[in-house]
Image (cartoon, rainbow, N blue to C red; front, side):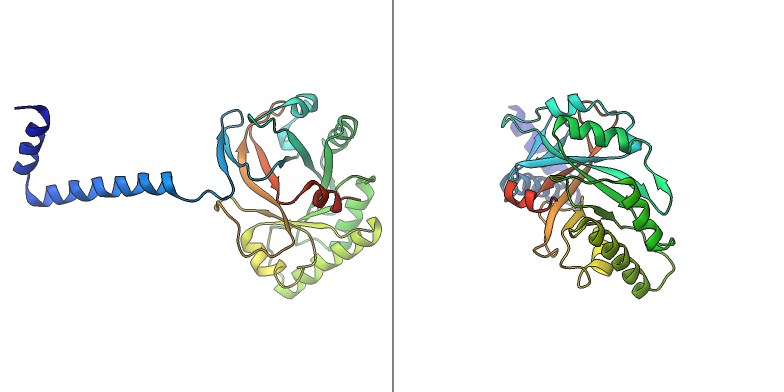
Length: 262
């Protein structure tokens, strides 16, 4: 008796309930394999071993964002890193500049200067504290960040709620945006997460460029036409950076990218 016949005999000797469970398990595994093998991949997701995550290679403009939590970064290594067979490099980086009314990121000035010297397109963001008043927060950013032609528009990182009424939170976001837009002469970019977007941004600030942090989806829906940046993973590796780092992709062309700069 060959091996397959022996397995068949043993299978038939099993209780009927056990056989049903085994058959259902095999069918489930086959269906799961077929789903992951044959499902559509419109964004061209591909595992990039060098950085340890998948990237949506439909898009060609990739970047990272960092703060002092990433330590002292060797920016020359960042600039030289090639992370796919298509000769893709990191094209841009956003830096945390300020938080609340008084805090400045201790690595911001060094990182900002290095990015400028190496020609990596750079942007600066303010981490908004909703239980602090917005005017002082806007002034903190303005006093800390000197933008030049070619830099990204300023970024408001707003992702925390507070005990204030929703209408007051929306009004204070608007205050920060108006002060910063008047100073730099360009609409700020809004960075947020899906829940905060649906509750506070959608329908209130649709005219502002959007940067969404959404790690759960292979495609993005429901964010409107002003969605430009997608932070899709927090756990990528990058040469010159200790530990993991946030990876982002730009959803437009190089011309669109320039339109979001001073």
